[in-house]
Length: 104
Image (cartoon, rainbow, N blue to C red; front, side, top):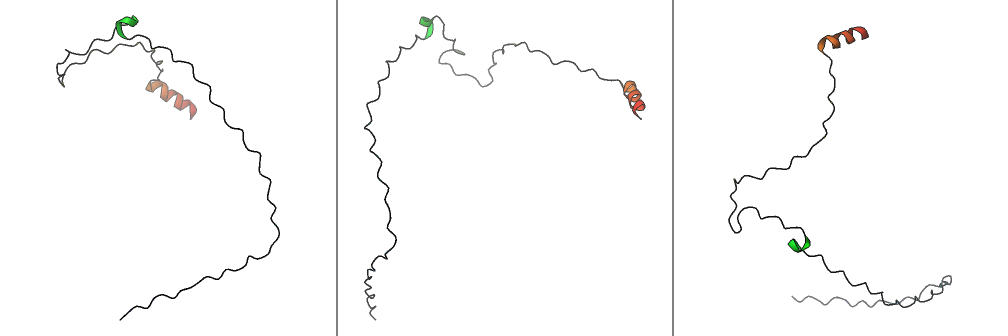
């Protein structure tokens, strides 16, 4: 059994419908061409690093090239002075019961 070819449908062009005239806005003036950007000033040289800068580099932790054991002691942390919070005055149970009895 042979399948027939699909029918050829040729679309018919319909004339555009007349309507109110469309007013086109005038085009804006073209933008001026961009000018070349001003060049940036040259970068200042970087300050020297290490002992040449007057600040020595920190010593490496442990021996250079030696593996660091996982249970190695850590250096002591710096102690920083912190202002303590004020101590709140608390009432004894006797004072609390005396105040509660005054309220009731």
